[in-house]
Length: 426
Image (tube, rainbow, N blue to C red; front, side, top):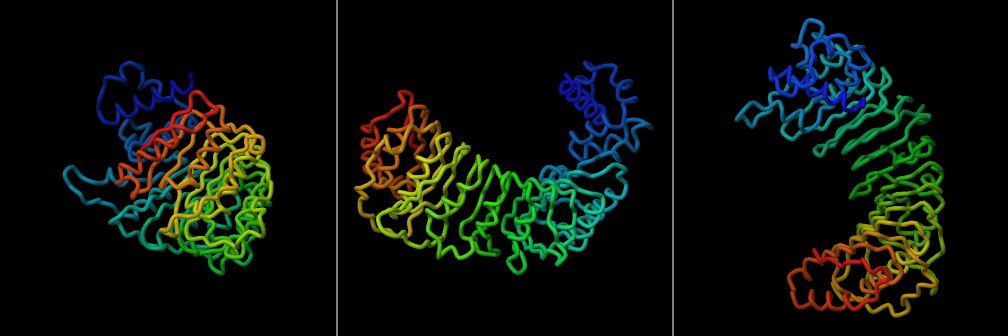
C-alpha cells in the first residue's frame, strides 16, 4: 500500500515539475497532499527521484522551494551526466563546483553518495577529496566511486568514517592512516583495480569484522591479500576474489585454497578468478582435500585450465562438497594450445560425488576436450534437479561446424539424472 502511494506521489511530482497532467490528475488532489507532507515522507520521495528531478521540485510552490535540501542520497551516475547534454549536443555542460554547492545546501544527513566519473569530464582531484572529507564528517554510510580512467588518489579520511557500511571503489590509490583501527560497521567492501600503499589491503579486511560481502578484483597485482585474513570473516556471505592477488600464490595449491574457503560457515556466493595464476603442483595422487560448503548456492570460476588434472579434480571435488549448490558458472582458459591427455581416473561415481542440487549450469569457452566432457558427464549423472546446461564453445570450435557437431552428439548420448535437463549451445 505504502509503495503504491509513494509511486503515485513520485509520478505526480514529476508530472507537475514538467508541467504535465494526466497521471497526476488520477492521484488528485495532488497539490493538497504534497503541500502538507511530513519531512521524512518528503525525504523518502526525493530519494526516489533522479537528482535533477528532485532539484526541479523547487518550482512547484513556495513551500517546495527548498524541499530538495532534505535529500539523503546524492547519485551522480551515468543518467545524471547524460541529462547535462543539451538537445542535439554531444557535450556535457558541467561545473563540478555545483556538486560542492549542492552539498553545502543540504540540510539532512547524506547517507548514500555515488559518483560515476564520466568519460570526457576531468574532475579536479582536490574537489573529489574535499567531497570525501565533507562526507566523512557527516557520517556517510554508503560511498561508491566508479572510475574507469586514470588512477585517482583518495584521501585517507575515507577510512576514518566509522559509520561506513558499504564502500565501493574503482581504479583508486590510497594509503590508510597509521592510526587506522578498522571500519567496525562495514558490511560490504568492493575494490576493483585498487592499489593500496605497502600492500596493506589485509589490514582493512582484518579490521572489518562484520563484512558480509567482499569483492577484490584486478588483472595485475596492485595489492596482496592473505587468505587467512579472509577466512576469519565469520559473517561473510559473498566473496569475489582475483586469486592473482593472493600472497605467495605461486606457492599455493588449488586444493588448499578451496579448503581454506570452506572455513567460511555462511558463504553463499563464491566467485574466483584464476586468470594468470600459476599454482604449486599437488603432491602424490591425492589431489583433493575434502571440504564442506553447506550454505553455498552459487559458484563462479573464471579461467579454469581443464588441461590440468589438478584443476579438474578440484572442481569435481568441490561440487561434491557443496550439497546445496544450485548455480554453477565456469569459464575455461588454456595456457597451452596442445590437447591435454585424457584424465581416465576421473570416472563418474555418483556414490562418491553424491546427489547434487544443481539447477542451472553455464560452461563458457569450451573446446570439446575429454576433460570438459568428463565434467559435463559428472554434472548430468548426479544432478536430478538440473534444468539446463548452457555451453558456449571456444572461438575456434565456434568456427568449426564439424567439431561442434561431434561434441553435441557426444553430449546427447550422456546419461541424465534429470528428465528435464536441456543442453543448449550458444
